[in-house]
Image (cartoon, rainbow, N blue to C red; front, top):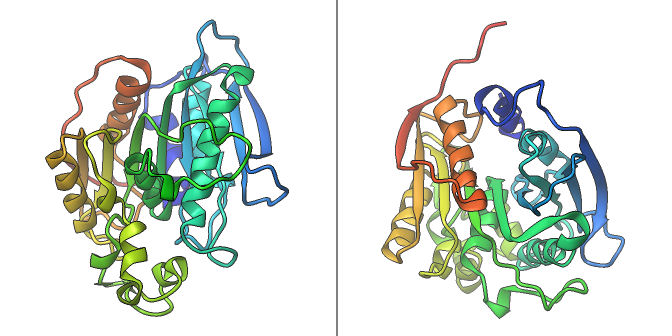
Length: 310
């Protein structure tokens, strides 16, 4: 199974909702968050149709694709299991890719989307103080940036009409995202320091030639004690993003006093993970930080379970 279809398995692996209890979904597509008609600067909103007396927490998904590919449409399959539970609203965020804009445009877009969610919380019965985010690969990088750069004016940007809103997030699920550009090096599947690498296209030049920009674009640079809690998931045999990107990042977070849990997928590659315990830990993480329901969450090394036979 590809990384882009990972969360489709939550319907089987997570006990969020039974088929009988599944909520109908209201979908609002291509909502502009930057007050323009750029289709990349838009979000998709997924809401349970059932009324709720309390505002619902929000789970936001940010797609991967090396900052040059991918689409917010991939968030639908990842978010719907959570939304169908009736417990959450879901948002899938698009952002400008590197054929259109370079860093820090991507994080400016993501922060503008978070500000839009807060500004429209009352309209859609969302809880503006409970915004969890998750992303894969390049999307993992962007959610890690959101989780560590709260309050940094240099990365905030001025997109949209809601600059009086906060872009901080409540908690972060980071799937194998790059966290320290200068140490990405040469992986089995990619030379990150090469002029044509995804990172070079993002940063405006080879990593080692634009070191200050590379540091600014690295979540590990911005770690501080007030960062959001993190759940990090990474495979030990990732051929694209070195596993050490996550271990060093977790260490830095914990040294700063930030809650940071690492799920290690033994022999896992760049996504395609399937493990019921991993799915349950993701659920527990959101329960704890978005709903105030305590669940045990601790570092785990898990096997990639074999594909189920039909």
